Each structure stands twice: as structure tokens, then as C-alpha cells.
Amino acid sequence: MISSSYRPAPGRFLVSEPFMGDPNFQRTVIFLTEHNDQGSLGFVMNRQITAGVHELIENLPPFDASVLMGGPVEQNTLHYIHRLGERIPNSQAITDGVFWSGDFDVLSNLIKSNAIDHDDIIFFVGYSGWGPGQLDDELESKSWIVAPENPELVFTDEYDDLWQQILGNMGGKYRVLSNYPIDPQNN
Image 1 (cartoon, rainbow, N blue to C red):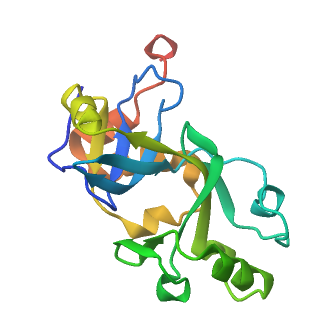
Image 2: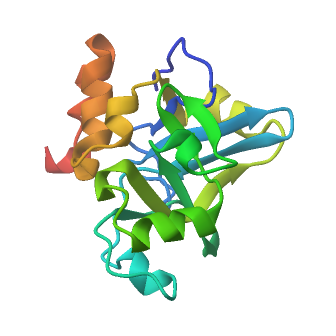
């Protein structure tokens, strides 16, 4: 398969190669929040679930933010990426205007007081993680294509088409990949 010249880094996307057999990651896009000597961590961006965050966390009012299946690891945890920056203390900057985590009590109060827009935050059930060197090995075997940062694509309404959109935006050989059928026999 094809690899890219980009290297993994916080804020970049991992795009699964078109024929990845692992059902957890088939046709997925992962937004990386960490990549260092201790490993890598990110969230699947194109597996939306139907539950609202108020159904997952007690004492939250209905709030129409997207909730995505972040990955197969620790699916009993809830994570969030947002555009709220310092409004949520202890947030970690990932890339231009995109932050990860922060003080959940402050976030909860912002939701309860209608002080934030549902388009400014995405929630994830579980995450995707790799141990030291594991992601590099998967990149070497061409399981993933690393795509550049694009904060606008983090907060999109088009999660279902994100895999195809990111590859298409990369142009050339990637645009060709974006149109590969899941099963070439059905072409």
C-alpha cells in the first residue's frame, strides 16, 4: 500500500489503508493527541454512536454534542476534544484551536448553564492506543497513512465521509485510494 511523507504527531490524522482487515479500524480516521517514546494515543473520528453524552454521564442535561466510539481501549471511559481552550482549565493544546480534556467539573457547569455550543466539543467512548514503537511498526507495514493537521476536519458534521474526504484532500495517489471499494469484487 501507499505511505505518506508525514510522520505521526499530535494533531495529525491516521487514515487506515483501504483494505485493513481489523474491524476495529477498517476505514477509520484517528485524530492523534499523543505520540512520543512511551506510545501513541488518539480517537477514531468516524464511528458516531447514537447515545447522547447526557445518557453516559449522570446529572448532565440533554446536550447535542457528537459522541464517537474513540477506539477499542477502555470503552468504559469518556474523553473529549474541544475548541474551548482556557475556558476549561488543564486542557492540553493539540494543534491550532484544538484542545484535549481538561477539568470536567468546569465543563459540566458550562454545559448545565448553556455557556458552550455543542459544535465546540466532541466526546469519545474509549480510545485508540499503541505501546512504544507499535505505531511505527504499523506505519512501516503500511497499515496507516499519516495525514496533515486540519483543525476544521476535527469539528465536522461529515464524520461518515471523513476517511474519503481526508484522502481526497491529499490529492494524487491518495485521491485514487479514497475511491477504492471496501470489497474490490463488488466493483
